[in-house]
Length: 105
Image (tube, rainbow, N blue to C red; front, side, top):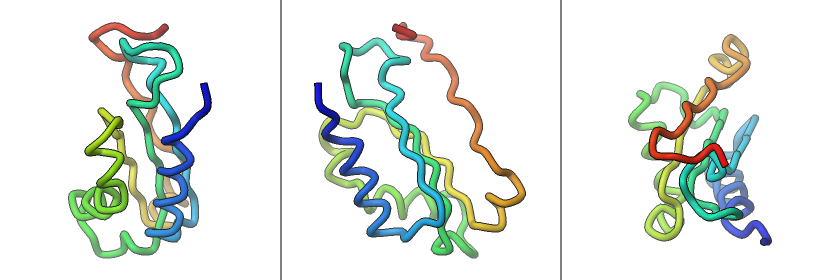
């Protein structure tokens, strides 16, 4: 099954947030969904646009870019949004927890 949603997410976040670093991981396989699903994603985005913004404001910027996808097939989006300085200090995003409703398939 061809990946359709992931490249759209990558393109929209690249265009809208001009990230210094972007990682979009399809974590659907960790949930109780059919094989090949694109419903659960983890996004790590590092952007100067997050300077002086609280976490909720950073998430809102990401949501603005992905309105269509969130209204459609994307069921869950884990967002890890950093400024370049924060990313330099941190260097990696936390691992996602295992789904309690099944998955791990």
